[in-house]
Amino acid sequence: MATNKEVKELDWLLYCNILYHLQEGYYGTALTICDEELCRANNSHQLILFRSIAMIKYGQYVEVVRLLHQFHHDTIIGFAASVILRTAHALLKNPDREEISELDQIINEAYINANDDARYNAATAYMLLDNNDKAHSIIESTNSSNIQFIVLKAWIELNRGKDINIAQKLFKKGIAAEYPNAYIGMIRLLERRRNLTELRQILQILMKKAPTFLPGYIEYCKVYLMCYDWEHCMEQIQRALLLQVLITNIKC
Image 1: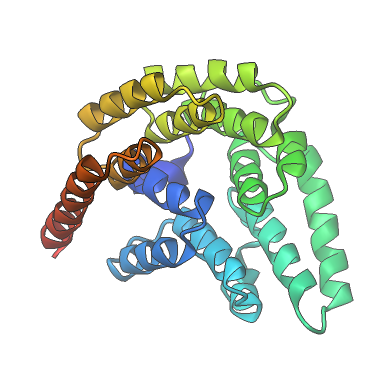
Image 2 (image 1 turned 30 degrees about the vertical axis):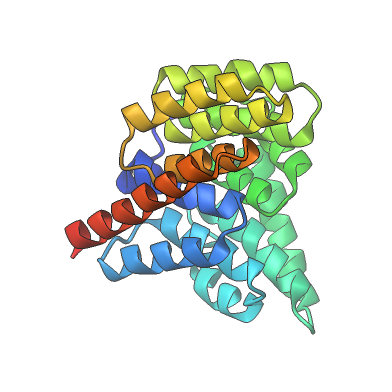
Protein backbone atom coordinates (compact mmCIF):
# COMPACT_ATOMS: atom_id res chain seq x y z
CA MET A 1 0.00 0.00 0.00
CA ALA A 2 1.29 3.42 -0.88
CA THR A 3 1.30 6.03 1.86
CA ASN A 4 -2.29 7.22 2.29
CA LYS A 5 -1.95 10.86 1.28
CA GLU A 6 -5.34 11.86 2.70
CA VAL A 7 -4.42 10.46 6.11
CA LYS A 8 -0.98 12.02 6.05
CA GLU A 9 -2.50 15.45 5.42
CA LEU A 10 -4.28 15.22 8.76
CA ASP A 11 -1.24 13.86 10.64
CA TRP A 12 -1.51 10.83 12.87
CA LEU A 13 -2.63 12.60 16.06
CA LEU A 14 -5.53 14.42 14.43
CA TYR A 15 -6.57 11.41 12.36
CA CYS A 16 -6.45 9.06 15.35
CA ASN A 17 -8.26 11.56 17.56
CA ILE A 18 -11.24 11.72 15.19
CA LEU A 19 -11.11 7.97 14.61
CA TYR A 20 -11.17 7.37 18.38
CA HIS A 21 -14.27 9.50 18.88
CA LEU A 22 -16.08 7.73 16.05
CA GLN A 23 -15.11 4.29 17.37
CA GLU A 24 -16.25 5.19 20.87
CA GLY A 25 -19.56 6.64 19.72
CA TYR A 26 -18.71 10.26 20.54
CA TYR A 27 -20.15 11.40 17.23
CA GLY A 28 -20.86 14.98 18.27
CA THR A 29 -17.24 15.56 19.24
CA ALA A 30 -16.02 13.92 16.03
CA LEU A 31 -18.34 16.16 14.00
CA THR A 32 -17.15 19.26 15.85
CA ILE A 33 -13.48 18.43 15.22
CA CYS A 34 -14.14 17.82 11.51
CA ASP A 35 -16.08 21.07 11.16
CA GLU A 36 -13.35 23.05 12.95
CA GLU A 37 -10.65 21.60 10.72
CA LEU A 38 -12.67 22.21 7.55
CA CYS A 39 -13.19 25.82 8.66
CA ARG A 40 -9.40 26.14 8.90
CA ALA A 41 -9.21 25.35 5.16
CA ASN A 42 -8.10 21.77 5.77
CA ASN A 43 -9.54 20.22 2.62
CA SER A 44 -8.57 16.63 3.34
CA HIS A 45 -11.10 14.26 1.85
CA GLN A 46 -10.55 12.04 4.88
CA LEU A 47 -12.21 14.73 7.01
CA ILE A 48 -15.20 14.66 4.71
CA LEU A 49 -15.49 10.89 5.06
CA PHE A 50 -15.30 11.08 8.84
CA ARG A 51 -17.80 13.94 8.93
CA SER A 52 -20.26 12.00 6.78
CA ILE A 53 -20.04 8.95 9.06
CA ALA A 54 -20.75 11.08 12.13
CA MET A 55 -23.71 12.63 10.29
CA ILE A 56 -25.11 9.18 9.45
CA LYS A 57 -24.95 8.27 13.12
CA TYR A 58 -27.00 11.40 13.82
CA GLY A 59 -29.57 10.46 11.20
CA GLN A 60 -28.63 13.24 8.79
CA TYR A 61 -28.96 11.01 5.73
CA VAL A 62 -30.06 13.68 3.23
CA GLU A 63 -27.12 15.88 4.21
CA VAL A 64 -24.72 12.96 3.69
CA VAL A 65 -26.09 12.35 0.19
CA ARG A 66 -25.54 16.01 -0.67
CA LEU A 67 -22.05 16.01 0.84
CA LEU A 68 -20.69 12.88 -0.84
CA HIS A 69 -22.46 12.81 -4.19
CA GLN A 70 -19.55 14.51 -5.96
CA PHE A 71 -16.95 12.13 -4.53
CA HIS A 72 -18.18 8.63 -5.40
CA HIS A 73 -16.02 8.50 -8.55
CA ASP A 74 -12.87 9.75 -6.81
CA THR A 75 -9.88 7.38 -7.18
CA ILE A 76 -8.85 7.40 -3.51
CA ILE A 77 -12.06 8.01 -1.54
CA GLY A 78 -14.68 7.07 -4.14
CA PHE A 79 -14.96 3.48 -2.87
CA ALA A 80 -15.50 4.66 0.72
CA ALA A 81 -17.80 7.48 -0.36
CA SER A 82 -19.94 4.99 -2.28
CA VAL A 83 -20.14 2.71 0.77
CA ILE A 84 -21.28 5.61 2.97
CA LEU A 85 -23.63 6.95 0.30
CA ARG A 86 -25.21 3.52 -0.14
CA THR A 87 -25.81 3.34 3.60
CA ALA A 88 -27.34 6.83 3.66
CA HIS A 89 -29.62 6.13 0.69
CA ALA A 90 -30.84 2.86 2.22
CA LEU A 91 -31.79 4.69 5.44
CA LEU A 92 -33.86 7.40 3.72
CA LYS A 93 -37.63 7.27 4.17
CA ASN A 94 -38.06 6.95 0.40
CA PRO A 95 -34.88 5.29 -0.90
CA ASP A 96 -33.90 5.88 -4.52
CA ARG A 97 -33.63 2.28 -5.73
CA GLU A 98 -32.01 3.31 -9.00
CA GLU A 99 -29.31 5.26 -7.16
CA ILE A 100 -28.72 2.35 -4.76
CA SER A 101 -28.37 -0.02 -7.73
CA GLU A 102 -25.80 2.30 -9.33
CA LEU A 103 -23.84 2.53 -6.08
CA ASP A 104 -23.91 -1.27 -5.73
CA GLN A 105 -22.35 -1.51 -9.19
CA ILE A 106 -19.64 1.00 -8.29
CA ILE A 107 -18.89 -0.86 -5.04
CA ASN A 108 -18.74 -4.26 -6.77
CA GLU A 109 -16.34 -2.91 -9.38
CA ALA A 110 -14.20 -1.33 -6.66
CA TYR A 111 -13.92 -4.67 -4.87
CA ILE A 112 -12.07 -5.91 -7.96
CA ASN A 113 -10.20 -2.83 -9.19
CA ALA A 114 -9.56 -0.55 -6.21
CA ASN A 115 -6.00 0.28 -5.15
CA ASP A 116 -4.76 -0.12 -1.59
CA ASP A 117 -5.52 3.48 -0.60
CA ALA A 118 -9.12 3.10 -1.73
CA ARG A 119 -9.44 -0.24 0.04
CA TYR A 120 -8.09 1.24 3.26
CA ASN A 121 -10.63 4.06 3.26
CA ALA A 122 -13.52 1.78 2.30
CA ALA A 123 -12.65 -0.81 4.96
CA THR A 124 -12.41 1.97 7.55
CA ALA A 125 -15.85 3.20 6.51
CA TYR A 126 -17.36 -0.27 6.78
CA MET A 127 -15.78 -0.76 10.20
CA LEU A 128 -17.12 2.54 11.52
CA LEU A 129 -20.55 1.65 10.10
CA ASP A 130 -20.44 -1.58 12.16
CA ASN A 131 -19.96 -3.96 9.25
CA ASN A 132 -16.68 -5.62 10.11
CA ASP A 133 -17.28 -8.66 7.90
CA LYS A 134 -17.50 -6.41 4.84
CA ALA A 135 -14.42 -4.53 6.00
CA HIS A 136 -12.56 -7.81 6.36
CA SER A 137 -13.57 -8.98 2.89
CA ILE A 138 -12.09 -5.82 1.34
CA ILE A 139 -8.63 -6.13 2.85
CA GLU A 140 -8.16 -9.81 3.72
CA SER A 141 -6.13 -10.51 0.56
CA THR A 142 -4.14 -7.28 0.69
CA ASN A 143 -0.55 -7.67 1.84
CA SER A 144 0.53 -4.21 2.94
CA SER A 145 3.40 -3.01 5.12
CA ASN A 146 1.64 0.32 5.72
CA ILE A 147 1.25 0.66 9.50
CA GLN A 148 -2.23 2.18 9.29
CA PHE A 149 -3.38 -0.71 7.15
CA ILE A 150 -1.89 -3.19 9.63
CA VAL A 151 -3.64 -1.56 12.60
CA LEU A 152 -6.93 -1.41 10.68
CA LYS A 153 -6.65 -5.16 10.14
CA ALA A 154 -6.05 -5.57 13.87
CA TRP A 155 -9.19 -3.62 14.74
CA ILE A 156 -11.29 -5.64 12.32
CA GLU A 157 -9.98 -8.90 13.80
CA LEU A 158 -10.67 -7.63 17.32
CA ASN A 159 -14.19 -6.50 16.42
CA ARG A 160 -15.00 -9.78 14.70
CA GLY A 161 -13.72 -11.65 17.76
CA LYS A 162 -12.49 -14.64 15.78
CA ASP A 163 -8.75 -14.48 16.48
CA ILE A 164 -7.72 -11.97 19.13
CA ASN A 165 -4.15 -13.29 19.06
CA ILE A 166 -3.78 -12.06 15.48
CA ALA A 167 -5.16 -8.69 16.53
CA GLN A 168 -2.67 -8.50 19.39
CA LYS A 169 0.25 -9.28 17.09
CA LEU A 170 -0.81 -6.58 14.63
CA PHE A 171 -1.43 -3.99 17.36
CA LYS A 172 2.09 -4.62 18.65
CA LYS A 173 3.46 -3.73 15.21
CA GLY A 174 1.51 -0.50 15.33
CA ILE A 175 2.80 0.31 18.81
CA ALA A 176 6.36 -0.32 17.65
CA ALA A 177 5.74 2.35 15.00
CA GLU A 178 4.21 4.65 17.67
CA TYR A 179 0.88 4.84 15.85
CA PRO A 180 -1.61 6.23 18.44
CA ASN A 181 -4.63 4.18 17.36
CA ALA A 182 -2.62 0.98 17.89
CA TYR A 183 -2.28 1.80 21.60
CA ILE A 184 -6.05 2.30 21.84
CA GLY A 185 -6.61 -1.06 20.15
CA MET A 186 -4.28 -2.82 22.57
CA ILE A 187 -6.10 -1.13 25.46
CA ARG A 188 -9.42 -2.54 24.21
CA LEU A 189 -7.90 -5.99 23.91
CA LEU A 190 -6.45 -5.85 27.44
CA GLU A 191 -9.81 -4.64 28.77
CA ARG A 192 -11.40 -7.81 27.45
CA ARG A 193 -8.77 -9.83 29.29
CA ARG A 194 -9.14 -7.70 32.43
CA ASN A 195 -5.38 -7.19 32.43
CA LEU A 196 -5.32 -3.80 34.17
CA THR A 197 -1.63 -3.94 35.02
CA GLU A 198 -0.48 -4.21 31.41
CA LEU A 199 -3.23 -1.82 30.34
CA ARG A 200 -1.79 0.88 32.59
CA GLN A 201 1.68 0.23 31.21
CA ILE A 202 0.42 0.73 27.65
CA LEU A 203 -1.30 3.96 28.67
CA GLN A 204 1.85 5.27 30.33
CA ILE A 205 3.82 4.63 27.15
CA LEU A 206 1.14 6.28 25.01
CA MET A 207 1.02 9.43 27.14
CA LYS A 208 4.80 9.64 27.16
CA LYS A 209 4.99 9.27 23.37
CA ALA A 210 1.97 11.47 22.61
CA PRO A 211 1.37 13.85 25.55
CA THR A 212 -1.17 15.95 23.60
CA PHE A 213 -3.29 12.98 22.49
CA LEU A 214 -6.58 13.55 24.32
CA PRO A 215 -7.90 9.95 24.00
CA GLY A 216 -5.00 8.83 26.21
CA TYR A 217 -6.33 10.98 29.05
CA ILE A 218 -9.87 9.73 28.50
CA GLU A 219 -8.68 6.14 28.66
CA TYR A 220 -6.71 6.81 31.84
CA CYS A 221 -9.91 8.15 33.44
CA LYS A 222 -11.70 4.94 32.47
CA VAL A 223 -8.99 2.82 34.07
CA TYR A 224 -9.23 4.73 37.34
CA LEU A 225 -12.99 4.30 37.27
CA MET A 226 -12.57 0.56 36.75
CA CYS A 227 -10.33 0.52 39.83
CA TYR A 228 -12.71 2.77 41.84
CA ASP A 229 -9.87 5.24 42.25
CA TRP A 230 -11.96 8.41 42.34
CA GLU A 231 -9.17 10.76 43.44
CA HIS A 232 -6.82 9.94 40.58
CA CYS A 233 -9.75 9.88 38.18
CA MET A 234 -10.60 13.49 39.06
CA GLU A 235 -6.95 14.48 38.69
CA GLN A 236 -6.88 12.94 35.24
CA ILE A 237 -10.10 14.72 34.25
CA GLN A 238 -8.54 18.04 35.29
CA ARG A 239 -5.45 17.29 33.16
CA ALA A 240 -7.68 16.47 30.21
CA LEU A 241 -9.60 19.73 30.59
CA LEU A 242 -6.37 21.72 30.82
CA LEU A 243 -5.09 19.99 27.69
CA GLN A 244 -8.26 20.90 25.80
CA VAL A 245 -7.87 24.56 26.83
CA LEU A 246 -4.21 24.51 25.77
CA ILE A 247 -4.97 22.98 22.39
CA THR A 248 -7.80 25.47 21.79
CA ASN A 249 -5.52 28.41 22.62
CA ILE A 250 -2.79 27.12 20.32
CA LYS A 251 -5.24 26.73 17.41
CA CYS A 252 -6.60 30.22 17.99
